[in-house]
Length: 303
Ligand code: ADP
Image (cartoon, rainbow, N blue to C red; front, top):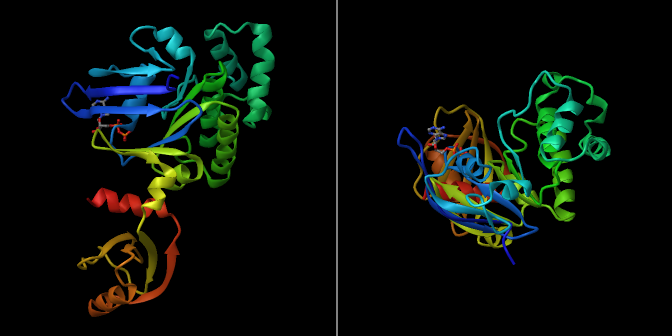
């Protein structure tokens, strides 16, 4: 069986000299829902740009369902839909025309395109807006329009670059439901995100990329089971301008009144309170940080 995506030793050096990818290799199984996670500047968009042939690679190869993009780009691309971060449609066209034109690019006949476009716009709650100019849509609906455009030729592999960045919580959850549904129906999905909750909710497997290298490539379940830290959010009585440094504890200031910590199973929260007390930092209340993946991520990035 071939993989939905197979990347070997992919390198990218931008013209200014930035080494964005230092030879990454990845395999994504057919039917998978895979998260590519990493901090800003890690190389996620560069990777996606190369897969979608918008960015030229410096070295390495990319296969989509066994087809090397260097050997048969048209066939490879017919199996791929990419939703990038940048708007990729004319803002002055109508929603329905944008998706219909895209169907035309893939040789879908007008008679066939019509019901397909209607179905896609309905599934993405865009049907009522079909005659609106794209520029009048909110950010979340523009993102949906890009998804409709990417899916109209029914690609077997869908790649989304931060699909829910800047999208409000309700639309985000709707989008999750939609993506889960098309994955269940057979579409392999890869998404990049730095919303860790998103990866935890949706994805079966996960790759973490940092500074142009894959640092973790595993199943979500394994990753979470390795977790031996628990996160706490401390609400402070008085504002701080930076997180205090306390030996053996990682502390992050989310805002002047909110201190976040990830505590190892073998460290004590009481000891932390003692140390904070010594520094005259008073905690008003405390709650559990619910996102375990995020704690892991904080731990990992510190290493
Ligand atoms: P991510 O998507 O994970 O935030 P990117 O792939 O966008 O990471 O960026 C990886 C690195 O490559 C960063 O250092 C970024 O500044 C650099 N980079 C990205 N695009 C370009 C470009 N067009 N020209 C030069 N450098 C770039």
